[in-house]
Image 1 (cartoon, rainbow over the protein chains, first blue to last red):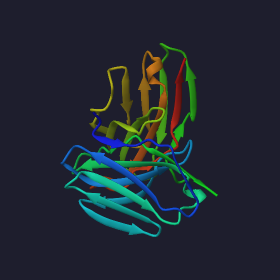
Image 2: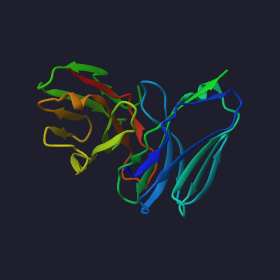
Image 3: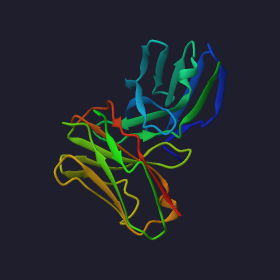
Image 4: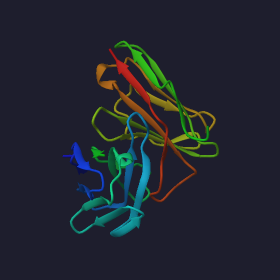
Length: 111
Length: 115
């Protein structure tokens, strides 16, 4: 079983919808939680970063971490066609210097 | 450009051949990482350099894979006796130095196809 599980989708929603993306993880030592966005044939780019549990908001994006249930979420409000990409959750233990990624969820926002 | 540069962007080779993939990190970044991303999967860690030395090579799948960074800047990932299962996108990333969580700056990757 993988340390980080993520539904690969694909997920297709209409423009303006609220999108919810989720991951679960198994290692309770994970302390850092990230969401990367990857456009087709490009490298991943950091979207959101959270340390330990809690919420973080940046514009239309909100990241949530619930360490008690080992659950990571990303919410996208007022989704736009430009949000169409693969979204990768990633976690890391303190000092490890290596991210553990989920499989990625392929998201399409339809105009 | 100012980003991480990887060459070649695409490489097609035959089973059993030797391959080198190059990564040029962001100027001044001392930490460099290699990841492998198979089709439909997330990136998987291969190796991490701090300066010239490999600080963690626990992700290298077997002894056919080797990476160097002789001058603490450019890195080369070397794959001997390639197998069809090595087909993937090989991603390189760099960061300014040791980090507590935080952002990896990825290149666009080298897409390797082994026939």
